[in-house]
Image (cartoon, rainbow, N blue to C red; front, side):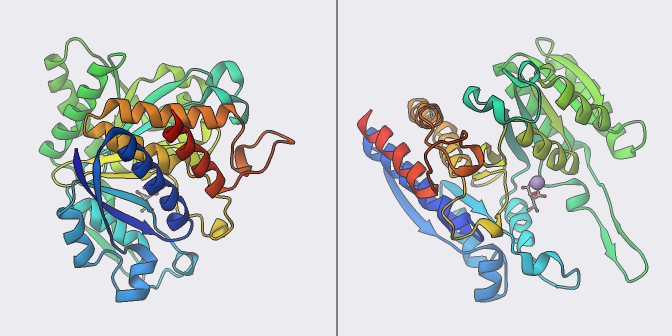
Length: 353
Ligand code: IPM
Ligand code: MN
């Protein structure tokens, strides 16, 4: 297969983990005979510094002309504590999602057997938990009407019926391929937007009689995720709730650095870690490249290249099993491996398999 991949490394640890992600794309391509053409493009704080725009038109064009986007992370502390700055790196990410129509963000919350001891949850609660959060990504408060005045400000949690319907369809498709259990997470006891979600879901559930649908308030879901994460199979929710719940999810698996995601919708799909740009870790060769590498697995799987994805997952599991791990998940007294060393180990595993 021939694939054009847009490479958006962004800020902070982005370029370092991207280097390993691309090395894995190459190793797999060589092994299976795929032809990959890369196009690098700028985004985030890097792009603000260079051209004053966190998602420049040229980057957008590069994405549109590619089959997939491999994205790392954006964000820089110089913008975080300055509420007056007119342009922020995160706007680049939001612009990308909106302009590519990426309404469905797929975030698998998968626990790794070898890392269960790193989870803040007790072993028997966390081990074996495996669910997917389908986060709506182009609506809600992130994009609804806003006002930012000196004395008052608001964000509007706007959702239309078609927006809710299309994301629920994606969620049902995933549920059908898994354990056939869908949890719709909302705040219908308080929010009008949530009541629309619930109404639409109740109307649609009859079309999916093979899937068990249940409804849960978001506060309860946040609690349930740490009390009994194995309850969940597929969870679907609006943009803001999904943002918060998936950070919670990533943390119960033992490391923020482990979870990949896919964003799909109208145009080119994007594959990216769910973690941020971790500016403090930049240049230190300590960032965990696994979320980026697993994003590459999701990329191959998106194009139905199952064996390719499976080999990457196998290599990642083997690296964990062999204690080839970055410092935050290293077992006590274990050897020290940096971003590069973990990446190289996984590439070698793939090549020699
Ligand atoms: C995420 C991030 C982004 C979000 C930020 C960086 C805008 O936290 O992808 O979860 O809130 O969506
Ligand atoms: Mn987030």
